[in-house]
Image (cartoon, rainbow, N blue to C red; front, side, top):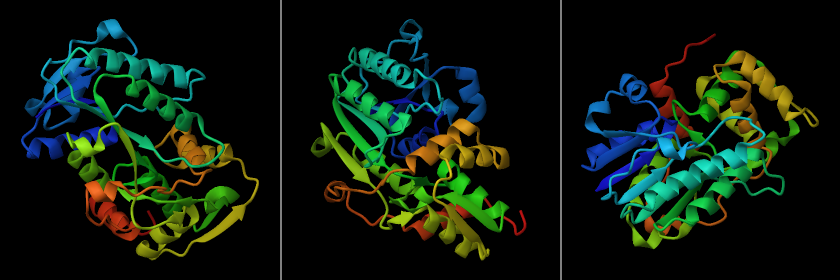
Length: 303
């Protein structure tokens, strides 16, 4: 099939491309800078590149008319006051261009957030879902909580918190339940729902078999690494304080860490499991996900 991928430079996008190429699909990547994409990806010569800034409709090259499936993997980590408006504009411009093709299905990876208080990013993603639904092609939405993989922000932050200090101070909301999923399983779902008519015009929760709090995820990492860690919970510690500390001690900026912190302030577990009827199979456990991620990023004691 001919597949269009928006968000080719995203974490999931870069991992999905080789998966689809291995299956023999023809990939068209929408990028803002061809040279940057070619410099960062070994498979750049095996895909077709078209240029476009989704915030500037006039800059977007025409999509090939024979596109059959489109992945929309665009997520902003910015903390702009206009975040929701900008992400909605991006999605609108994408759908407007896609509607000029014969695309049958659009696939969007969103997030699970079951709480009453939504972060800006959770609200923005729900808005993007609504915009994408207005397109001519059938929309399929996959909603995931924390994704565990060697390059995911969630895994790196869990890793940095646990590796860098024997005493971990966390807010009281780390006890909200979450259902992490291995990036390998996310890719499996993304691949196997392509042009499956049972998934058209539907949304699905996806997650691994374990329901854990963020505190338990830290403890699980420490156990695998055989690290003794004391976790002190401070009930009224603001998310911004933890985010600031994380941004000072790891490779992620304040905006990224605050987005993760805000997402953990709500329950994020699967409330429906119908995806398992369409894409059967056992997802990796949290422990298995961590081990797989660690095998791709070797860690040393006293790092």
